[in-house]
Image (cartoon, rainbow, N blue to C red; front, side):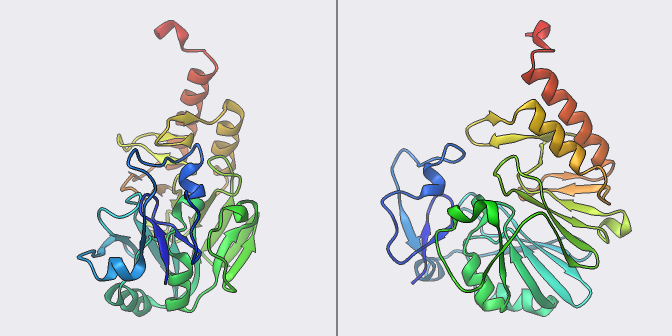
Length: 269
């Protein structure tokens, strides 16, 4: 039986700890009503469903409303292959068949521990390896032979490159999809670089729910590290999209962030 944290939606071992380590960390939280666990069997027996949406050609979103932290998994297709990015903490037969129908699964990859979901279950049903950044391996709550450690830059497919940037977590990753946006390129940024609701700027945070900013130095490093990648569009896992000029928006946002955390804008306070 697959045991799942109700709050973050991440799978754990057959004997879960008293408190989910991912939620107990300062970047997440344990709700006021305490730690609760569920199971994949229990969710599949409930009215839980997955909403599938096409976000752009060859990119789909999978979302299970009301479950876990509410993020959307992304399925990107490259030729005859697909990559499942940031798996959600739920799956059902219909969605599995949909993903299988898009192509062969090259890998299941989470950008960081908040997005692990039921990654082992997804890897099993798609017969794919589950890639974990080596710097975050201590956060993996369920071990399995499908887990493979990676780090740095990994060329997954001709137009899909995995990059470790760090920041939000030491192993936080982004996925560069050079064929996305009709060849302009799409960056799957997750929470490593968080697209803001204004659809014009991004955020650089250690914790999004607890509002902990990254330092000026780390923020500028993240912004600079993506400038040599091929993308014009940027998407996150909560519906945030920078449709165009994403690199420029990221750099402007980083400069704004630095001005506030270093006190350059204190006269406006």
